[in-house]
Length: 122
View 1 (cartoon, rainbow, N blue to C red):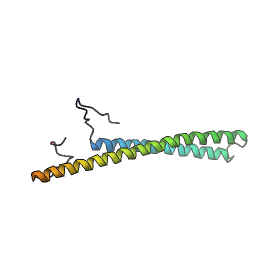
View 2 (cartoon, rainbow, N blue to C red):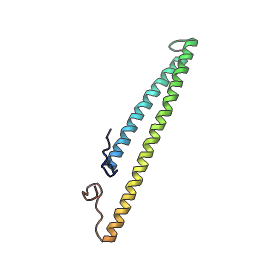
View 3 (cartoon, helix red, strand yellow):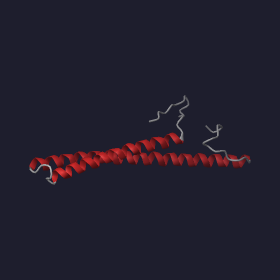
View 4 (cartoon, rainbow, N blue to C red):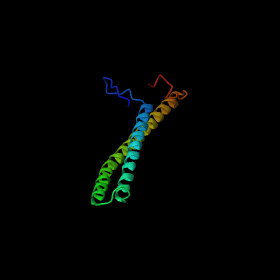
């Protein structure tokens, strides 16, 4: 993941593309986590259904696996919520930046630069 460099004035060198990349990486990791949790749930169901082993121990073991999954399932949801929050914040700040720059350009009577390519606004 990308690290954030801070300047002395409190600003960061983090770009909108960096936030998007972090969100995509976190979402990908959360998806892998969810896939693993689904596999563990499938295993627990197989054990509980008695196709592998059939006694009270199988039931107890499958219950413990399902409890483990439920704990990690909450973490998965928190990660995904954090990704959505970061993406929404980034989109909001980007929209504000675009609005401010468009207003400045309109007041100066100049064409609006592209924030991604302009060196002036970096």
